[in-house]
Image 1: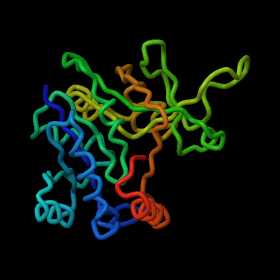
Image 2: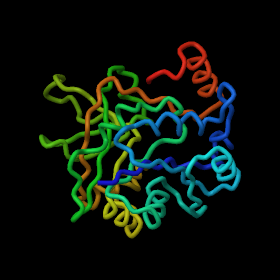
Image 3: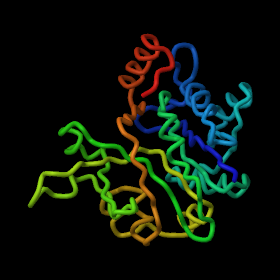
Image 4: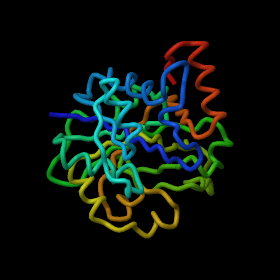
Amino acid sequence: MKIIGIIPSRYASTRFPGKPLADICGKPMLWWVYNRVRGVNKLDEVYVATDDVRIETYCKENQIPVIMTMSTHRTAAQRLQEVSETVQADFYVQLNGDEPLINTQAIEAAIPDKIPQDYEFGTNIITEITNCAQVMDASNIKMVFDNEMNALYMSRTPIPYPFKSIDFQYYKHIGIIGYNKKMLDFYKNSLPGRFEMIEGIDTMRFLDYGKQLKLIIVSNCSSLSVDTEKDLDMVKKMIKEHGNVEV
């Protein structure tokens, strides 16, 4: 079974242009992400997928496998699907290019021992929400699932609603997602679903169309994505104080 890790990397970020090449302690952010994830035992290969020649040039100069993709992709899943057309694998894992301290244990957890190939299948890491403010934060995607850990719904609003009980745990989406080829091809060939358009959550498309998204809980799995200069300063401080720390 062949497992591929893919780091989607865009230069033209709206909030932070050029952030994949932003300096962190003498190395670009992309260098930190790649060198962190390439040590994950379950990943056979890791590629950067980009539409920008500056990122491609940096990768080639530093022996980082890179694949140029179209600039029209709106989502990471679309970029992964294009990569899947040229790199054959049993499973493709989306690795966030703006998380230089990405949780490697969560990446391992996203890769199941058995991966079906005859129907659309994906996995998504989730973690417990321990802070009440995070429950109300619309940027944290709340997840609900059945007894078999299949995703039922995801929302920016707190779900489930504590009407008859408060004895439950909220869970949030972590942006480490795995897909088989059929799942990626479905995404490419489908239109945004009803709830995807309402919630503004790309991954919701799989649930809109009844595809299987298996959720995997990783405890204490914080994610620190670099969206602003302030986030970048925080990551620099953490690396200077603790080295290449585990988030």
